[in-house]
Length: 257
Image 1 (cartoon, helix red, strand yellow):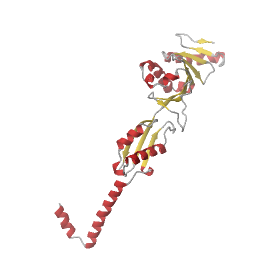
Image 2 (tube, one colour; image 1 turned 180 degrees about the vertical axis):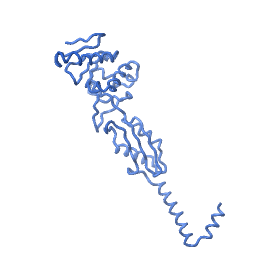
Image 3 (cartoon, helix red, strand yellow; image 1 turned 60 degrees about the vertical axis):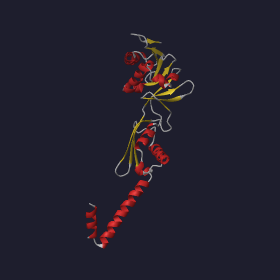
Image 4 (cartoon, rainbow, N blue to C red; image 1 turned 90 degrees about the vertical axis):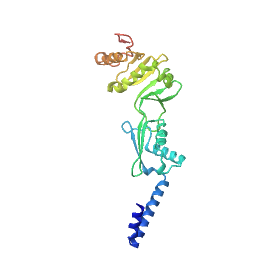
């Protein structure tokens, strides 16, 4: 093969030979420049899946973090460690999942899936945070405040323990939270849940003034059905401010006072 190249090269004119040599040189220089080229913000495209455009982590945050990683590792464009970048981004407090790829144009494509908050936690001691859909604790965000149910009371101290959240003991409570977050009606109606040390709940809704003594999360669907019936059949007749307390924690009963 090399003999054939030499033969073809020998029949070229001087001008063609010079042009051929310069082409090889420029290609080599371009390749070496790419190898040594460092990543910059213009060479990154960041996609963030958020809730209606509300982000806990911004495009600027992601790019800054990636640049810090590459600088620390002294990575050039040809030496980017995609796996290391993904792992570092996945450790970010608001990132649920991430996919990173380098396309043929040398652009780094980063797709971020944020953690989804399902409740805000406010403990009596002043500790605050968000409870994520994975039942991990998220810190407050400097960018936006999601509209989620607020959990207060002495029982919130237990919710700051991820071991408690992942335990069988909290299973029914987790199912209750998931239910009201999936249900369009209850997601809009329940503004606050006060939880005592035994995980008994008092619900505060937006549609009516009575606070609802709910008890523990057991049989939550039946209790929610009773509240809805109370709203639809009782309050329109007696007035929305007739009662201060409604208790639905006992079987086949709605106690009003």
